[in-house]
Length: 300
Image (cartoon, rainbow, N blue to C red; front, side):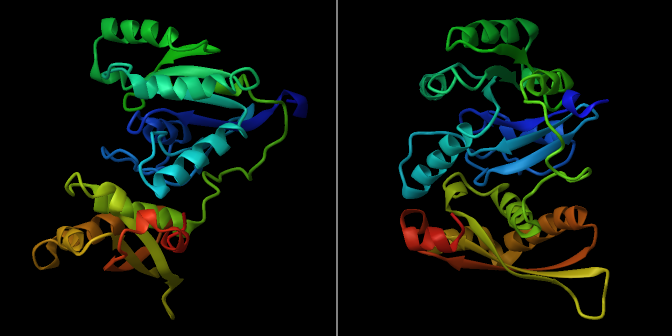
């Protein structure tokens, strides 16, 4: 194959929070790099997944869900989304098959139509495994009316339905060019960022609805233990905004935090391919989402 026939470039998925963007990214990349959760606004960093094919290299930028912001964190997340859109070669707009197309979707479509002239936008109906064929067809027709898409496709990341076809549609819209990342790399995120995200995901599972936006994780230290080449020590802080939230995350006599630690450790060991000792502490950073200094400190 000549170099000219090889395509490489960037794609990103956008949509309301919880539209299935991260799950789709993981399905395309074939590995868990974007954290997934039933909680909205789980993704906070533009984590890139890299799809390696013989004919192409597709780099997926996974953005936070776009929403009408209520806090400084919300505004920063939205800025991040729009900065990402302006830099990619193709955009996938995700709408779940099992939810009505609403004002939130139309708000995003209106923003997207500003870039649609220079960047192709694909309409993607996600989570088709949750509904019948008729509902999928209905959703495709409704989505068609929202804006002028370069193409429309229904997918199910869970059942791998049309995931490869979607990859073909995205690749077809990439410029010709050589590989941008070494073969075998799945993400360009530093390991510490991924480890922090896995801890945050474990903490989000099962906490009450008022918590998701209030959890941030920092990795204080991460290094191989002296004299052992099979063990990595990870020291992490889990931040919440109020003392009452700290109690929720800790659970009765620390039981909840123990569960979080056990779950996160399993995922981190799979990611790093090594045994891990995980030291977790819960700290209160009062109203960190509204404080520029604390946002900086926590990496936003």
